[in-house]
Length: 277
Ligand code: COA
Ligand code: MG
Image 1 (cartoon, helix red, strand yellow):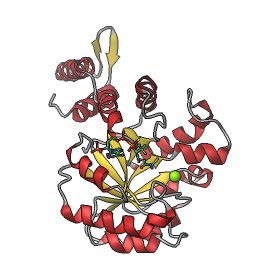
Image 2 (image 1 turned 180 degrees about the vertical axis):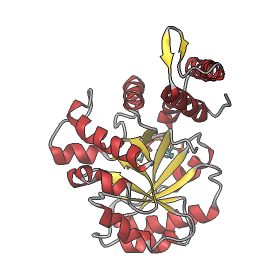
Image 3 (image 1 turned 135 degrees about the horizontal axis):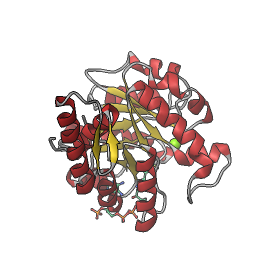
C-alpha cells in the first residue's frame, strides 16, 4: 500500500522549487501546469517541467502531473509533452464526469494512472462514476474552487464544504482509490494547518495537498499513525487471533470489543505506519 500523506504542489515554472523537491520528505508531488502557472508562462513551464522530469531524482515520491483542461488552449500540448515521460499519474483539473476520465484513458503510456481534481459541483454529484472510471488512482479535493463555485466561505471548520468532501470520500472508498484533502491556504499558520490536517484525518482522508515545504513535517506527523495507535492496533490483532484460536469471534481490548472489522482497520493502521504486526 502506497502512502499518500503529503502531496506537494509545485508550479511547473519554478525551477528552484522543482529542484528543492528532490530532497523533501513528501509521498507525492503534483507538478502543476494549471492554476499555479500564469497564462504567459504556460509554454515555458511545460518545457521546464519536462526537463525536470527527464532529469529525475525524485526517488520514491509519486510524480503526478496536473495538466490544463482539454477545454483550454494548453491541455492537449501538456499531455503530449508529459505522457511519453510516463509520470506515475496525470491529474486532470475540474473533472465533471467519467467521460472526462475516459477521454484521457486511451492517451496514456506505460503504467501512468489518473487522478481527478474534485472541485466542481458537477464532479461532486458524479463522484461515484468518476471513482469507478478506468485507470483511476485517486481524488484530490479542490476545496478553493469548490468553495468559490458553491459561494461559501473557506477556512474555519469547513462545515459549508462537508457534504461535498464526504461525498467525494465515500465515492473514493467505493472505488477503492485514494482521496487527499484540499490545501490550507495560510501556509505560515502552523496551528491552523495542524487542525485542518487532523480534521482531514478524522474524516478519513489519506493525506493532504500542500503548497509550501514548511507544511510537510506537520502533515506527515498527523497522517502517520502515532506510536499509541500502532501499539493498540498490534494488541487488537493479537487479541483477536488469540480469541479466534479458541473458537471465539470477538475479543476485548481495553474494555472495547474487537471484531473482524476492527482487525482490518488495525492492519491498515500498521500498513500506513509501515510496520509489521
Ligand atoms: N515546492 C517546492 N519548493 C517550494 C515550494 C513548493 N511548493 N514553495 C516554495 N518552495 C521553495 C522555494 O523555492 C524556496 O527555495 P529556496 O530556499 O531554495 O529558494 C523555499 O521553498 C522557500 O520559499 P518561500 O520564499 O518561503 O516561498 P515563496 O514566497 O517563494 O512562495 C508560494 C510562496 C505560496 C507562492 C509558493 O510556495 C508556491 O508557489 N506554492 C505552490 C502554489 C501552487 O502550486 N498552487 C497550486 C495549487 S493550490
Ligand atoms: Mg482548481
